[in-house]
Image (cartoon, rainbow, N blue to C red; front, side, top):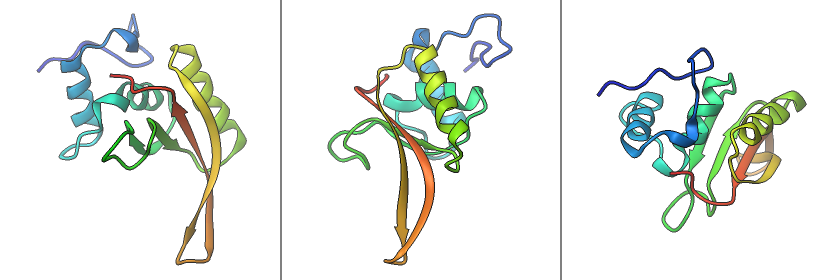
Length: 124
């Protein structure tokens, strides 16, 4: 399937206009063999194309890893969170929250911080 030009250098970058076939192609391209959920791939692709390194995402809902659509990214440096938020707001994504979080490894070791953006609804 041929995908339209996209990315920061494309003449017209409109993530809100991508159709389901395009989103499915992006989902496979971004994570070959284990495509990203269609309800979050629009945000992941836009963030990645804007230079934000993502590492975990989920469209949320029953049977998913997160209750709400979520993208995790960055190593906790302040500018990374604000850049990710700025990208999402620029493209009109329905952001619910920007969070800085730590995970607990081996039952006692805090790891992080990392950033996550939570959306009000899936973006399919």
